[in-house]
Length: 145
Image (cartoon, rainbow, N blue to C red):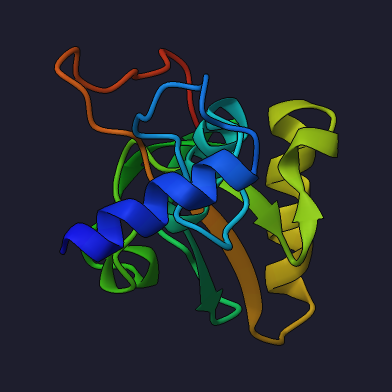
């Protein structure tokens, strides 16, 4: 154990880190010291990615009411509910087309209708809401799909 501590201090001395305080951001010998701000950004992106889910739908009634990309209600007897979609989720992509690039709620509704009219299964990527102590945001107006 004393040898390991000695090796650690010798390594810090070789790397010119004797004046740098030892802390949580000090990497072990042979590893790169990572920027804590970069780590925070990457963890945030990973958290968002973990909240996204892509679901495949049949070309029939979805059973959702939405305001633009935001899901307001889900019909419990329809396929969206059976696949786990819940109020508060947000549509991020429809058939690999980002909803942010669409021009409002009417275009999102049209893309959903066209996807169903083609008669083939299609995908929608949803982002689950971040749960916080303030609850979920609910838009006031809605349109059904």
